[in-house]
Length: 402
Image 1 (tube, one colour):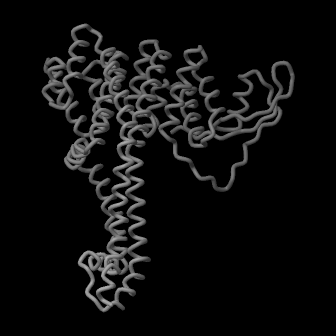
Image 2 (image 1 turned 180 degrees about the vertical axis):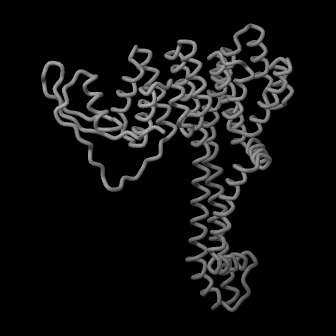
Image 3 (image 1 turned 120 degrees about the vertical axis):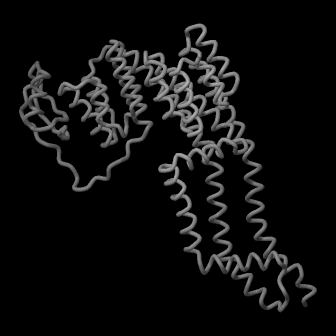
């Protein structure tokens, strides 16, 4: 098991005898001094850096892995040695969890493991596709080029994810606000009107009576509503993780949603094409590349379609024919794939497909924002306005009661 690294502060003399201070990551005090000596310095004082008694660990975000990929690609392309690239990267990091991750990878490489083997020790942050691409670059002697491909792939993938989150965040936030406002009105405002209505001595309109009854129900069993809401969300997430059939059904429904469904479909096609283009260009055989693509699609419907494509390609069927048989991919995607197969440039053609659909996702999200604004205003108007109207209906009848 790899021993965790610690941060050591040092005071030393450089090659010219000038004093120098700094910090270094090492497994032990002796290892820290050894590293300094190897770097041409004479250690004078080395001590372990004191850490706070409790320090909250920060989660490593996908964007940080994407940034790491780009930094490594840039430095390797500039001719910086692998281990030195790690050291430079670590100095620019602020997240302690990310520092520890890269330090562990650096120590594994210094211990004799390959870059891909060191990455494979951290499957939570570097998936099988990432490790396989790095291994392919190491075996072919083109690690710098492969890291550039990986960095581009990660940047495109993260860009698509951010755009999808952007498209879904606005309506989700509005729905949550609408629910909170409705709950406040039912719990705090409606009871005040109810006490006033009782003085009228007249039967309430059906709509008003429904709102009053709903208010009483929320006041008495609000915890039940909260439990059902939270439980439903957690239950759906759990079922998606444990039941492929349920996940397939939910993902299929998501693709059929008005407006948003088309954006999700285009994003899935872009991820499919981008992943397959990257892996195939890296020299990974098509059948093996499809294994990685299935897990990167982001939708169970497209993942299942990819598995079917793999099965047919394994038996000798052309990829374009296998894609058409799934009834999932648009004709344009199938036709461009056919052109790529016939011309021997499948990776370049798939990259073109990814570019097209990524651009379409951009345009769709931009138009979605302008489309959603009036719809959201109407939604809020119906919910909040409906409650207000229900409260004022008895007041409109006050004259007849008096």
